[in-house]
Amino acid sequence: MMTKEEFTTLRDFVYEKTGIFFAENKLYLLESRLTNRLNELGLSSFEDYYYSLKYTSDKGKNEIANLFDVVTTNETSFFRNPPQLEAFKVVVQKHYLNGNSMTNPIKIWSAACSTGEEPYTLAIMLEELIQTMKQNIPYMIYATDISQKVLESAKRAVFNQYSIRNTDDSLRKKYFVEENNMFKLHEKAKKNVKIDFLNFMDDNAYRAYKQMDLIFCRNVLIYFDEKVKKKVIENLYECLKPKGFLIIGHAESLHNISRAFKPLVFPGTIVYQKG
Image 1 (cartoon, rainbow, N blue to C red):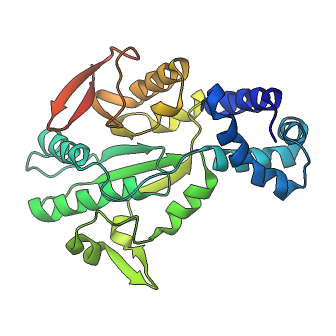
Image 2 (tube, rainbow, N blue to C red):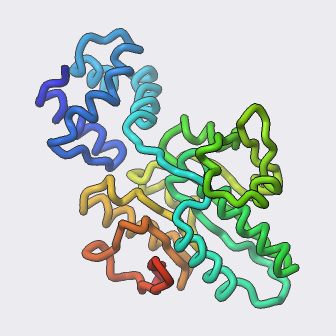
């Protein structure tokens, strides 16, 4: 059983490394998520687990990666929150497509991409726009997450029925191959999606994601306290091109976090534009 002292020590360590904050009433949640790690490592206490993270060089580094896997929440699916996706489509058509051939690709960052459903959804939508408008639309989607486990799953791009439950049958047949009740994504929806590791707490990591046209960072801020929220939003702001767009979770808001964005109201959602 995790003591209050062990909870505080590990909670602070997780916060330092990931920005994720476990409130006092989340002791049992953190305990349940870490118990399997103790069993896997043959440790008898959460204090021993903390020392294995903090003071054991290479082994500790590997275990920190495992820690990232177990403390993050990865609830996602294809075509999640249609009003936001419709707003994305409108923004792309209004601000980036003008009937002329495009030379510079639209650069989109799916931050906290989890197992890949979000960036691949955006890719499918853009592929559909290319066919509908009969216009070449070069694009690049950068998909990042802190969990190596979900990144490996995203790279495999094989999904279960639950993940594609909101996908129209026509799109499912067009972009997936069904094998043993699993759905393998077609290469045409993967070819412009680049998957990589990123920790929001690493200020230097943002340098690789400058000059973005659009950033999706949905359902991430809810796990951070005010200090980390402001830090992350400031970094995302710097990564956007002038007048670029930020889309956060439908239950999230930049109120009291940043005044640097202009809120644009769409049916059922808000998109934030860099000022």
